[in-house]
Length: 309
Image (cartoon, rainbow, N blue to C red; front, side):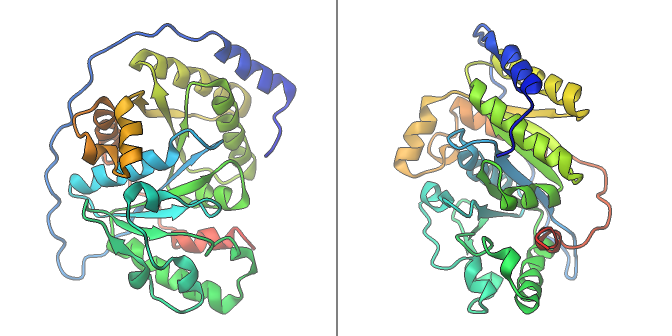
């Protein structure tokens, strides 16, 4: 992990030192979304790629990725969730959906992308990353071309590809984040989580490749606390990095989340009316809102592998 200069780290800790008073506010109810019309034959589009990352583990990143994928699917969108946490992939545990194959089988030519993709009862499709891309820098040209050709099919078949990236700052995480259309940076109100989240933003800022940046505050005690946390870290990013870090939403602290994890069921399915589920519904609406046309670029997965050269 890159170490922040003392003045920046101290500034961030000073800003977070005073914990905001907890306040309550009514939660918005999830709104029904019309199901997307079936695509005509031959229709082609490029998926919106959203990387979901955090500066440290234990902030609920994978839980948000899983539940957001389901919420988007329930809104009628075609979604593929890729567990790109190559070190400790565990999205399949939260989904209670063990996948027999992963991207390493595609790299070795043992399976096609369709064969390693499973369709969940809750709507989205799912791909387990395992260790398949951990050796991306060592793939030969033929293996790279085969992997890119297979994965590029996903971009022509779906509306959203959500990448559950690994925690912390690694070459894989940076590559996924840099090549995505949008990065959702997950943090909690804890000072250590915020400091590490800022460190990840700093690394990306210095790389010269930046997606659209959005902050999601998880385990917030109240809407007011979430907003204050988002404002503070955004102020530090603006002051020291000259970056605009937009608040994309928050997930309120909710005992139903832990219950659902123990049940190995996403909380939007186990407790669809709980506060955390309402927050995920709001996040899905923001992610799914109309956005300016993205410029033509090479395949996302081609851009990822290109960053390993």
